[in-house]
Length: 329
Image (cartoon, rainbow, N blue to C red; front, top):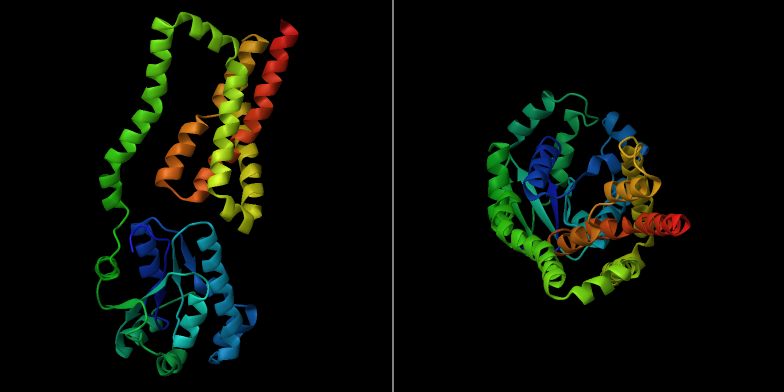
């Protein structure tokens, strides 16, 4: 399922090492990791602290919250890894309701190993005496469920290697090397083609060059607007589902642009007003068109939308710079 947004739920009873294996798997894949225990309501934590087994009614809101978290990642077009005990098939069905492609990695082992691990674990709210309750509740993955089992007795690295092989996934470091050439070609085309066109225009089409220079401000503005529209149209469905993503991206982009522009102010202090403004803009606003192109092709929607949103403060700076230029003229 390479290339498909999917979510791997690392399941198993307490003490199996779900968090350790899940975090290691997420690092190898370059996906975000979600710790399911962090979503337990306080009442559940108190019961487990007291050694009282959770009921299906206790787990239901917790599982629905985790399904919502999977749905959130799905809406972002982002694969993820989730650590969750998922002891029963009915629990796993709730998680599957959150996204189209939810798969399971069961970290499994003997009771002796589990008990030994729980006996040496500190700083966790799950007491060892609840182990038998969880083992009694555990329902192994059925043949029709999309999931695999790895032995918890293996090292974490070997568990992850086995999981990647059984799930048919490629770690980030593998495709990164394979995609490096593709990414390099994309970057070269994006940078060199406009550069070559500009160079040839300067040498052979002097009248066209002069015309472009006279109209450079509106042309640059139009190209930026078109780039933004292309990004937001491409991710239109996502933005309609999660409009807050655009607002968060605009807020983060504006803050980042402000920080970078302020950082350039000491360096531009001795420059003229017009040159200093141009310097701050160039320092504060990176090549977003290039970033958007690369993000759309190689990364998730979040990065591309963030890059597009980063152009919003650029509009403000460009028009202010244009206004300053006209006043001086």
